[in-house]
Image 1 (cartoon, rainbow, N blue to C red):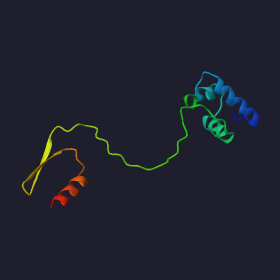
Image 2: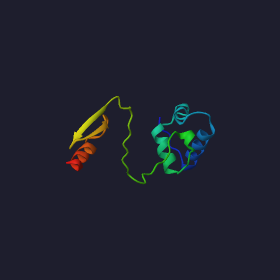
Image 3: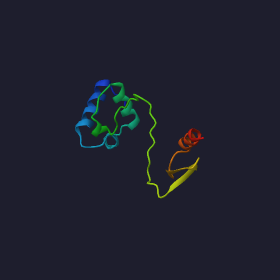
Image 4: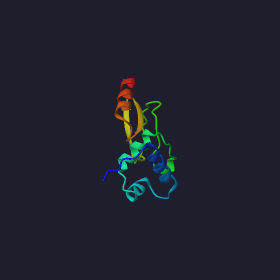
Length: 106
């Protein structure tokens, strides 16, 4: 059954959870508290947890970047021959790069 608690009672529960060796989820189960309500009250009351206790870290996006990461090494190369010039290209080369290269060589 739902029990109405004051902000001071919530602060006390949050501090007890922080001091316990239980995860937040286990603490809530033990004390018959809704996990979502616990998180909402903690957020509302701005109680800060260390990252290792809550499992979450607040993150901000500073700059949006794109990164191309090669996850596999090439097994073979492609050979491009244009105007009597032979160019060996790794098989994983992105198509947009190849298109630019062919355009520049034309």
